[in-house]
Length: 201
Image (tube, rainbow, N blue to C red; front, side, top):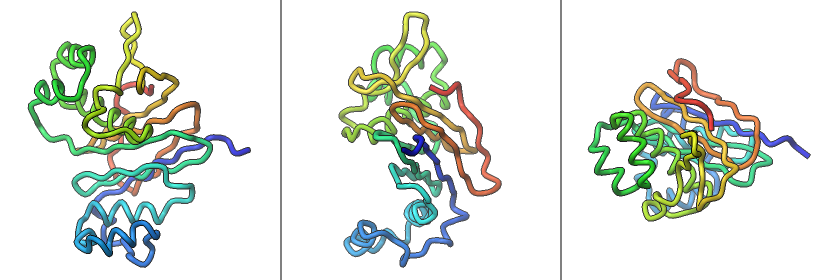
């Protein structure tokens, strides 16, 4: 039996020109037939280029403002990825919509920092994808659980056992989540600025 393994593939706009329509899988070919304008979108071109580079099965993908992430793996039943461009927004108002009271308190105590908000947002969206839940209606049902010592854990519908990594790119935040244990690595195009954000979950 193969050891559980996850590889997150990352690329930005510089890879859009490497997109090849003939390399699309059947599902994506159908989407292009239904919506031909997809092929002109940089997000689509970069994410589908990454799918074509995958050695392991594609588990989840995300794209935002020309950058894309594709989470591939084996031996993992539930996994998700989300990448978001870090716009400046009204974070307290958005948190009222998507965050639990405990999560809002945590963000407020830390001064509503942009990076903290996008860490939570990307983790929530990645958890939704991993559990096949609905955006935005289920956003408050997933995210942080807090232990008595203040330690944060990830949960979905009060289920635990979730692992996660959050990475900060130059202008994006990225979260990968999975249930159970797995070897995790990142395979990014050269020269992308990537740093861990916070401690792994």
